[in-house]
Image (tube, rainbow, N blue to C red; front, side, top):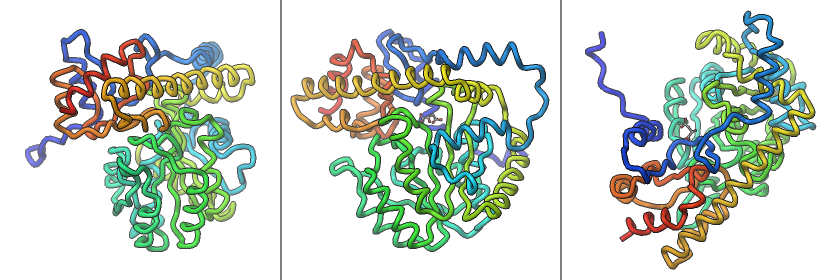
Length: 393
Ligand code: LMR
């Protein structure tokens, strides 16, 4: 049987992890995979999560199944975190998932069940793993232009392109901290897009994987919430990997908004059936920790404070790196980095320049020149900027 298979193409982001690990050079710099790194280059367990783990360890009396939707309290808290205090809870349903990727896959399968002919319109560029996830669910995919290195977000071109979508098609959007560009829609653009999509019967499918990393917890969800106020139906994949730093433990939520409570219940029953067919019931540890943090006022406040420190540190790194690049290149070519948000921006290098940066200078960034802002070594920014500028020639 296996003789029919060809080797799979390596994942462009994850392949960098092993290349970096195997590089013996002392001065190498890892700006590849999207994990937060502190000043010492580590990815610590957050204080509140550590305390939640301790409490969980002491209080958890059983590891029996929680059911298809996972932890119901976690799901309710995730709805609150993403949709805010004014959420129309009668129309919202959430299921705990293995990370944001689990939520994306579950919701993609739900789209196929509900509307097998729907096309999912994905922004170009987007997180590279979006496309395999949608493909694995058997969905048709189209793209709309999102970003141009010279001019920024191509909003008018996006709308023009989405005029080609049919009623019932789905539009994939990044809730905040667009991956890979760090360029987010303004609230005016969210509002205009929401009106356009509602008018044409297009269903929003929002991936929010970096809530709290951009402008703040509520600010990062403001566009999504605005969309929810106008959209009759909506799908949201939320991840706890980054903002709770529980990457390997895998926690997230698949959230759907129905036209009314009865429709939400029906769709949710199908969503749970999808999960049953993939992982049966979701893993619990990280979701239980997130629940404990969000339920406890003091832990929640401490988590928010630590998350805020993470966010502002990335903003400082953006500013300092843009300044270092300005000095090294003697130009404003890289100034945009300071104004973008979240964990990623793209340097605007060719694939050959990206390869040279890795081979000649031990600097690891993704092939499209995406770099992880949180990986920037704060005390070596001038050296790094000089390496970047040297491959431009
Ligand atoms: C990234 O974009 O680097 C992260 O979301 C990790 C991943 O799974 O690709």
